[in-house]
Amino acid sequence: MADQPGVTALLRLATDGDREALDRVFPVIYDELRALARSKRSVSGAGETLRTTALVNEAYLRLVGKSALDIQSRRHFFFLVSRAMHDLIVEEARKQSSLKKGGNLQRVELPDLEQVLYQSPEEILALERALDKLKAEDSDDHDVVMLRFFSGLTMQEIADTLQVSTRTIERRWRFSKAWLARELA
Image (cartoon, rainbow, N blue to C red; front, side):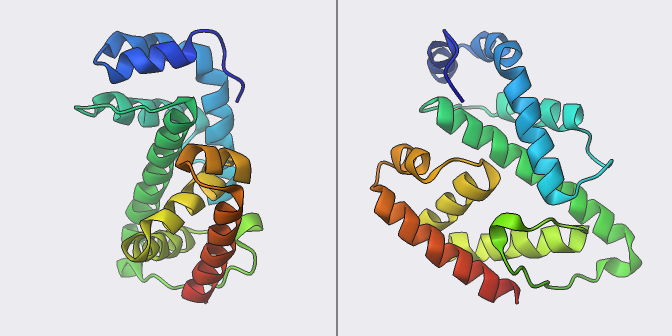
């Protein structure tokens, strides 16, 4: 995620209210957004329900559609886009699940959160419910999971983004993985 010239400046302009700045950023970082979308699709098992291009475009439209943007940094922008992609995948899973026999959802065991490959909408939704519960209990731990698992940031990048020590992030990550594994068991 090396900063191309002007990306950070354009993101700052977008935060200051220049909506066209986001339109100028989009083509510059499009390849990175597609890579992020491919990663999210492979992790989520979204398959053909949400194609990579559609996921990038829909996430971007969601971000641009917000009435007020507060983009603090390039990393924060990718976190926002990643979160939008995650939400789109979860919404698609909910839609698919509701079409199946009343949408009976089951919790599934995830032995290693970092290596999990979701195979069904039910598993995506089970994780989403667990993440919602984690957010209600400790939003900082939730943010660490979102940045690590869904955005793919390193421990150092997360520490920089959240402005805490790397040791704090490592401790929160270990706790959050164990908490989610227990919650999903």
